[in-house]
Structures are given as structure tokens and as C-alpha cells.
Amino acid sequence: GAGVSQSPRYKVAKRGQDVALRCDPISGHVSLFWYQQALGQGPEFLTYFQNEAQLDKSGLPSDRFFAERPEGSVSTLKIQRTQQEDSAVYLCASSLEYFRVGELFFGEGSRLTVL
Amino acid sequence: DQQVKQNSPSLSVQEGRISILNCDYTNSMFDYFLWYKKYPAEGPTFLISISSIKDKNEDGRFTVFLNKSAKHLSLHIVPSQPGDSAVYFCAASAYYGGSQGNLIFGKGTKLSVKP
Image (cartoon, rainbow over all chains, first blue to last red):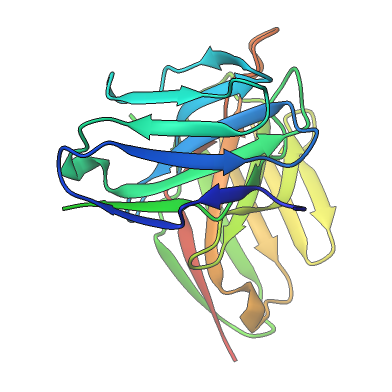
């Protein structure tokens, strides 16, 4: 497709369940970012890939969060043993820029609700 | 500690008048600033940007002003239209010389343009 595609759009999980969120970036975009947006807040950086290399994961809140992009295109954000505080919208964004962040193209997000 | 601050959670403006959205930042390393617009249930979309070597950038009805000494930027929308009603996020980035870094977002300002 023409834009960044994320799935599922909505996910309800019971506390303790594992979830996987998928991002399909714009074709040809080398950079891919994951952001977490809590209610009433701005997006907060989680992690960044350049092709298949995860260059920055400093924003991941705990070791329960794991992201991968094995072939440099589709990325998966996995959250293990979900907690209520993980409830948020998870935004994926991609960019043409290689050496510095510029305009990011965002997907519609995956809204995670942990009960 | 928030590096990018949008102190007004909401703003209401009459159609046809000017909308001014403000943003302050604390990190003097920031050298590139962007505004994103977000409608409900959609991802943020890029609106306009400015490099720190400029103090003004204009694109149609949208103008961004940067005051580096005050660490302040503003987005002006003239004339405002009802379709401009959305949440506006200010974002900033820094170039770390080979490392792309990421975008730091403010909490957003919800703009309502009344017909």
C-alpha cells in the first residue's frame, strides 16, 4: 500500500498475555520507528531500526518489550506478560532519511488495552 | 523532564481568524523542528518543519516561527478553517553526528475552529 500499515488496529489482552503488533512501512523506507502514545500524551520514542539493524532501543520501558525487523521491511513489536500500564496506542513510523531524522510517516496505530 | 513543552492543552478559534499554537523546548542541541497534525483514530501527519538556521518557514496557510534565543517556536494558521480542528504536536530532533536520533514530541494542543 501507499502508507504505513499497522495491525491489529485494536487489541484487548488479559494481564499476563503476550501480544505482537505488526508494522508494514512504506516501501523503500530504510528507517522505522516505534512510538508509544498514552492517553493525553504525545508519542514517546521506543526504538529505531535502520534496515534490519536496531540502532536505538533506549526507549523500550522494560525487558518485556522486544522489537525486530529481520529482513529490513516489516517490523514486529512484542510485549510479553502485558501489564495494565502497557495500555496505549503503539505507533509505527517510517522515513526515507538515512543519517538524520526528518519527516516521519506514521501508521494509524495499534490500540492496546490490557485488562 | 519534558524537553518539548506545549503548555496549552486546548485552543478555540473562530473560523477565518488566526490560530497560534506555541511550543517551548529545553534542549539546546535541538536543531530541527516539526509540527504534526492528528485527527482522532488516525496517526499523526506531517504539517511543516523548520531548521534551526532559519527563523521562519511558510507553506500556504501555515507558518512556523523559531526563536532560538527563547527556545520557542510557534505555528500560525491563517485563516483558520473548521477542517483544521485536530490535535497539533510539536516535535524536535538533534543531530548526533552519524546517529539519527529520534523525534521528541510535546503533549499536543487540541485546536477547535468554530464555524
